[in-house]
Amino acid sequence: MTALKSIERPTMECETKHFLMAQRQLDEIALEMGLDPELHERLRYPKRSMIVTIPVRMDDGSVRSFTGYRVQHDVTLGPAKGGVRYHPEVNLGEVSSLAMLMTWKCALMGLPYGGAKGGIRCEPWKMSMGEQERLTRRYTSEIINLLGPDKDIPAPDMYTNEQTMAWIMDTYSINVGHTVPSVVTGKPVSIGGSFGRTEATGRGVAYCVKRAITQTGLDSTAPTVVVQGFGNVGAVTAKLLNESGYKIIAVSDVHGGIYNQKGLDIPRLQAYLSEMGKVSGFPHSEDISNSELLQLKCDVLVPAALANQIHDDNVQKLDCKILVEGANGPTSPEADKYLHENGVFVVPDILANAGGVTVSYFEWVQGLMHLFWTEDEVNNKLEQIMGRACDQVFEMSIKSGLRPRMAALRIGIGRLAEAKRLRGLYP
Ligand code: GLU
Image (cartoon, rainbow, N blue to C red; front, side):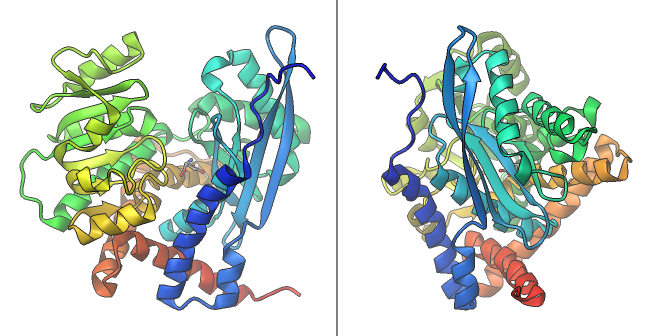
């Protein structure tokens, strides 16, 4: 056999690692809230999972096979909803645990959706636009029976964007014979997307930072903020907080971080990034590593990059008062407990980064109504929903003594449990 050009299928160990962590989190809260054991058992596994092999003609004429996934964890409250990510480490376990997280997130935010996630094992940064388009279209056609505005609605996630959604929407529409904008969210405004969707996740994170500061009574006129990740989520969070008078003292991207105790000039940094393709080397700042960045003394730390960034090995070195999770799953369960016990106020991912799926919901609703809102209308509605969810989580956390993550899970899972009870079991 000739040398394999494709990314190999993941090992069993890496498949199960993520998924077991998500199950453990469910088990902990299920016990705490006295969830019916039979229902608990049903929620521990996805409703449907699909693995597909995606052959793609590369620019050099060769054909490479990629592995793609779409997992629907639960569809009790409505169509399955969740992003599609392109990354070489994507695997069934990771996608399944993220689908479960989407179920809890949508239920917590009061959105009429179940949870899903999808992904392809690939290195998008090494692929041309043409290769990415062919990969996306073939993936869509392989999973097309799962999709539909009433069935399962993909959205952007890591290394996918508006263009990816436009290709999915087009492929689906061609196959069913008419244009169906509401089969995806996070698409460009010119083909039925919503104003405010691109910035929505970062806007929601920035809102949670402000709420956490009020909640903890932090006394500072210009709180210091460290942001890990300067992509769509981190950069928008930094920009909005900076505009509100916060001091962004450090940010990072995949290449490394930068630091200035007096605060970084965020508009200039954005211009620098577009020109240089990375944040390091930015004038009037010091280059630092990603691990140094996490240990900086600050009021607020926002991990907005990859999962599993804060764990047993580094949690004791953190020096923040508030941690707001822009990424999905950046903190391990053990680290989360440690932070809570040591007085750090953690706003969990299913609340902090829910702005994205909330505006996805607005986009879907606008598409189905064929009636579109202004950016102000979208942002006001987002703030209302984020505000309500923050109130509920913070109140539940105080009332029950649960740490905010557990309080958020309890609210989301409680709503789902009630819906499942009322719908009953068929047959
Ligand atoms: N991928 C985003 C998330 O993790 C957005 C999902 C969506 O809009 O459906 O929440």
